[in-house]
Image 1 (cartoon, rainbow, N blue to C red):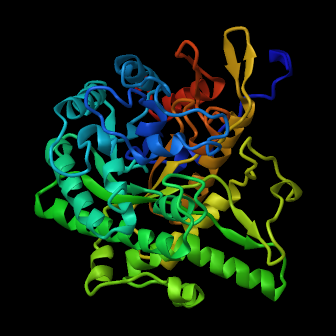
Image 2 (cartoon, rainbow, N blue to C red; image 1 turned 135 degrees about the vertical axis):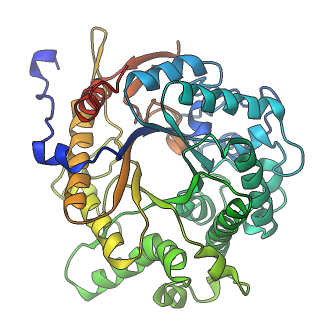
Image 3 (tube, rainbow, N blue to C red; image 1 turned 180 degrees about the horizontal axis):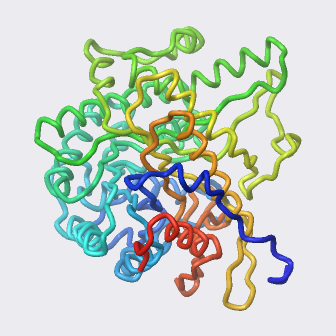
Length: 456
C-alpha cells in the first residue's frame, strides 16, 4: 500500500483530551527478557525462559532471547529514544537472574549497575521509572527446587523484593511485584505453552496462590522497610462474554470470569477465593495456610491492568474471533476497545480499587515499509481508540492514574518468537536499527498536545 492510500491519522476528540488531568501518567512499557539480550553476560544467571527456549518446538520460529533487542548494550540509545516520545514514565522489569543469579544469596554487582544506569538515565531525562520485579523470568536455580510450586520460593521472592527496594526504592516511582500472575500460573503450569512448560492444573492453581502470597508479603516487607515507591501488582484482565444466551454458555462464561478475574481480584480485595471456582476446581484447589489470605489482601497503592481484547466463550468449544465482526490483530485477537471501558467500570463498581493504570495496551500488526517510513495505521487506530475508552471510563467515575503503550520496541514475543511485532518502534533484528513507526510519532504528537513543551 502506498502512502497516499493509507487511512487518515486518527484524531482524539476534544472531550477525550480534556478527560486526562495534569497528573495523569503517560508511558511506554517493556520487559527484561523480551528486549535485553546479553543473557550470559556480566554474571547473569539463566532463567526459566532461557531453559524453555531450548526445548524443540516450543518457540514458533525456533528463536530465543539471547540477543533480542540488545538493549543491555544499547541502553543510552534507547533512553534517548524513550525521551524523544515525551512520555512521563517508562515501565520496565528487572531480570531477577541478572541481579541475583541463583534467586537467593549473593547479589550480582554488574547486574545492579545496569539497572542503576537505567534508572538514573531515566531520571536525568525527566522520566519516572516504573519497576516490575517479576515479568516471568524466574531464576532457573529456583525452578530446579520446584519453582513457584514450592512455597519456599515465596520467601526468596520477598528477600529479592527487599533487596531491590533497598537499592532502587528511593529513585523509582512505583514497584510492581508480579506482571500477569495468571499467565505464569495457567500458561506456564496448566497448558505448558510458556515457561516452565508444566501441564498440571493443581500445580497451576498452587502457583497462582504462591504468587499472590509472595505479592502480599512483599508489600508488607517493603512498607516495613520504609520503601517510598508506590506499590502494586499488574493483572491481565478482560471481559468474558458468553457466545449466546444459552444457560450452558452463561455458565462457562461465569467460570472463565472466575478463573481470569475473580481468582485474583477477590483475594486481593476481599481476602477470599471465589466459592464457585473453588467448587469447580475440587481437589485441585490450592493449599492455603492460616494468615495467607489476610497477607494477600494487603492494601495496594495502585492496580495495573493489562488489556488487549475481550474473550467470547461457548460451552461448545473455542469461539473463532474472526466470526465476531471486528478487526483482528496478528495474534488473532479481536480489536474491541469497548471492552476496556467495560472492564475498568466493572473493577471500580465491584471492588474498592485504588488508582488504576492501564499498564499494557497495544497490538501486533503488519508494518508497511514506505521508503524510510514504517507505517502501521492499524496500530495508530488501536491506540487512539483505547485511549478514547480510558477517557470514557474516567468520565464515568473510574479512578484512572495512567496509560502505557505495549510495547516500546518490537521484541521477543515469548512463544511467538520474533514473528509478531507489538512495538511502536521497529527493530531490524539483523542490524538492531530502531525506527519510529507512525504509531510512535502519533503517540508523541498526542502527548505534546497533552503536555505542551514536554517532548524533547
